[in-house]
Length: 415
Length: 147
Image 1 (cartoon, rainbow over the protein chains, first blue to last red):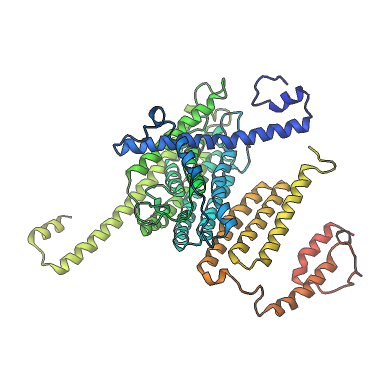
Image 2: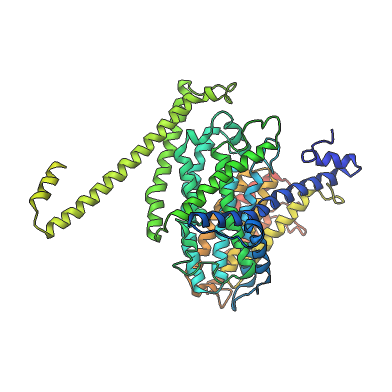
């Protein structure tokens, strides 16, 4: 094989240079793992600056602007500060679990990157069960939270962990259910397969309700506002990581920052066509640029939401999930599965030959989109009738207390 | 890649076996129930590794999702809510003799059913005994490895 594209043909190149083939294979895989694992970690350093800047602009501040041009070196200064801080292990803490949990927390996010396809030819590993792998790996993060909360030997940390675990486990359900819809549409769980299935049309237009559900649940999984009861720094004690200091605390937060951007990546891969974009077939590495651009858009929306919305109360948080998101995701899944069958039976679906053609995809996209609109309209109708019932009940209470005025009677008669 | 006669699969198999058995020993010897739950999860993680080695990645993902992501967390959660239970003063409760009475004979019968190739010392094979429900897995296993 030619030794031109060093990333693709690393192992053959080493063999050409006289390495043992097995050793070359091992070195090539090792390099791949190193690259895939280092890339998100390095991105995080930049993301901390981006996040602080965007938050500052939304809140009409300047943000970091002292260290380096535009404050670009601020994260590096922060890291130096954090490394210099004392590493405290509380008395009575379970040392092993206490030290392991930040690592597991970050690892659970980092492992997701293994299945993300960066470009048509660059992907860590194309698992057949990519989506399931993502859900399985992401669920380990919950374990890290509970380990941190328990091992700190602090009742506030433990209470914080309970709060978090309740939230994370609950929001995993709409997350998983909304993921099933793209899997249905693509007919595969492989991440590469999902991206390839979006060559003609993004799933965002076929399944907007799933996309929104996934976005909301992913936001809750990262513990960002309006779901930031995990930390809630202005009201509650910081939560499960209250006893952590210095670099261990920083690792938790690096994991969180990385998780937000990872969610952007997943939104890009699952709903907005991943690496697809102009000229990707000619220059595969351009796919990475498109992917990061798309992920950045989702990342920005996530930050925007975080800095605009107030925090939910814990009971509101739970009822929002169990009374709204979970039923909605189940109904959405049923409707989409039914429509998929209808589209196949009626022959609206594009044939295998022109599955990548934009125009051929338009009819079925219209059907799916209308189905989503129907689901959304049904949701709005349910919410409206519920609100109306509550309003009438309140009015009835008021009427029982105060005598009915003539103006009120007229208003009620006209309703 | 080979290290002597060892293939990477063999190394991974050994690693996961150590993880499973070590985790299982950790579960039964730990006085601290939360730690025991952690060991249990390590053991179950090893089982997921076995599934990967058997080219069953779907089962591996489900193993992690269900046993670590759901059951492990449920156990940990339940143990933590009962704070006094996290530090057990004794490894055994008062029913240890009942557990021993059940486990001893069952273990002996299971050992008798194990194929001789898997055993170092082979005692006299048990002639015939009515199969217990617990024996059924071992029966089906031994049918795959005659002798």
